[in-house]
Image 1 (spheres, rainbow, N blue to C red):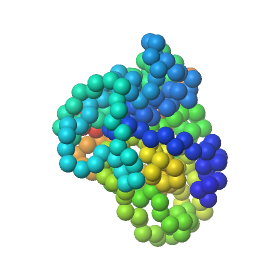
Image 2: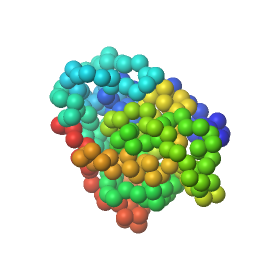
Image 3: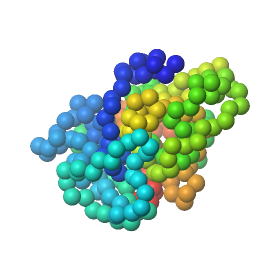
Length: 258
């Protein structure tokens, strides 16, 4: 099943983000794949977006900043500010501003927040894709399923049978892309594209909508949300979709100092 999904999505990428630059990584990828390669004469990559989005790196601390199987990468092209771990990261508002500025306003970011549940996640992923929007989600990874569950677990979820949720790989605030919804006879799964190829199948893993809803709600005193990146003409359609499914339009507070 996973091989067919990857083929339908255009194969694998194999590229890993630099430590703590998950938001800029996805912003740069969406911009590049939308035809934007430079910004004011500089190449658009995760480093440039991190600089312009005011990303804050964590100060020296115990523990790893990368998930199991990943290799730390800290060769940043620009000097970025630092703060205690709890205040580090990239804010959703500044990430959206950077995407819109780098595309000279040709791309629009609709920030979505609210009382996430499985139905809202399902409808957003399915209907936003039909509108041509890219969905960059800011989640807590500790509430996701582990990225390599047994095939029997995935099939059981699609068939609506009770299954044991695989333990999460790690537990941090993280940006990922929600790519497509897969429907089964009685259940569904979302293809999540991660910035770490060591997770899932070369960076893609399958998550139940209810697990993604929990990851967006976070439960750690911070907020999660989704940036719907789209072209100008589709912006109002995305906003209308948000209203239909009961989501608010507005940036969320993920705890970043910036």
